[in-house]
Length: 183
Image 1 (cartoon, rainbow, N blue to C red):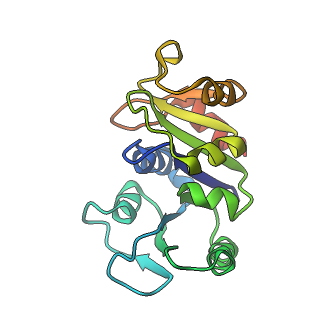
Image 2 (image 1 turned 45 degrees about the vertical axis):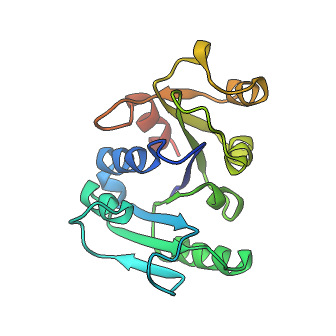
């Protein structure tokens, strides 16, 4: 029962697309996909299950890709212990959990921590630097290490992990799927 955390260095790096690609490629895993968000999204509940695969929200995209279940976890204004407890409960109640959000890497002990990179975006959030310290691998669109927009400390951190180039429309690769299959 793997637990995977997927985070990214900035907004719009393709985190949800990579997760949807993993879910679609490994449907037999019957994934439970969880999106962590600091935003309220109109509800006060900490955890909300998504049941409608029709639409464009991240949790709807998980279901459309073939996830067995999808949840939105609102972290904003919550104590870390409360969020950790909710995530651990979701892990205990579901098999094969994939979590989206940099913060998740510090709240659970994943079997795989995957950093999603876009080489055409120079922004690198502080939370992404912490994620990169824990990352086991990276999925990169526009992969071009010779023309990286990031400073040397980031590139040194990336040099210690395997980087899997990914491309639209599925945002995954055979090598990345093989890595996940080995967990």
